[in-house]
Amino acid sequence: MTEPHASGAPAQAGTGSTARPPAPAPGKLVPNARWMFGDPARFIAMGFGSGLGKPAPGTWGTLFGWLSWVVWLQPLSTAMQALVLLTALVVGVLACQRAGRQLGEPDAGVFVIDEIVAIWLVLWLVPAHWSNQLVAVLVFRFFDILKPQPIRWMDRRWKNGAGVMLDDLVAAFYTLLLIALIKRLFG
Image 1 (spheres, rainbow, N blue to C red):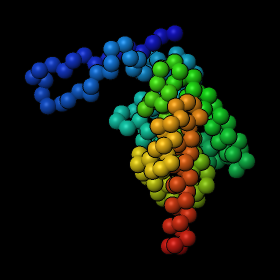
Image 2: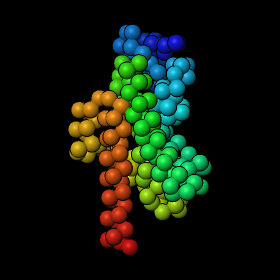
Image 3: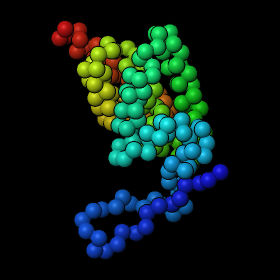
């Protein structure tokens, strides 16, 4: 098993105005592609690599989720989509649990399978036109970033695979609720 490297050499004086992110604590694992490919659970938890996107890995995971929905899942029957969603939810919980244990961080920012499964759920329930999907993605990101209650409480309280997935499912619920409310009020 190959472990990630601790990155972040100290910033050198006179290197210009570009600031480097703070170095991780000594000995802390920094997930990278090599670490991700060391275990299928890591690969899944990290959204098939989309969690390595910088900045804002959650946004990259959501965009990957949207793209993969349009390309792979949208053409499937409704029943098959439901089966994929349920399977992805269970596999996501297990992958995040295992990868979080290996990393020593239960809800690392690079774990984005939760965003992927949540946006799949939203896209499953909104009309399939690209403009509806764009609105759904933007609203989902708003709730996922803002973390209104009880999302924030869940995010802080449940530090395991189920907790990683659950807060994004609630953000998906808020997204669907707001979209339904807008549709009801405006047409």
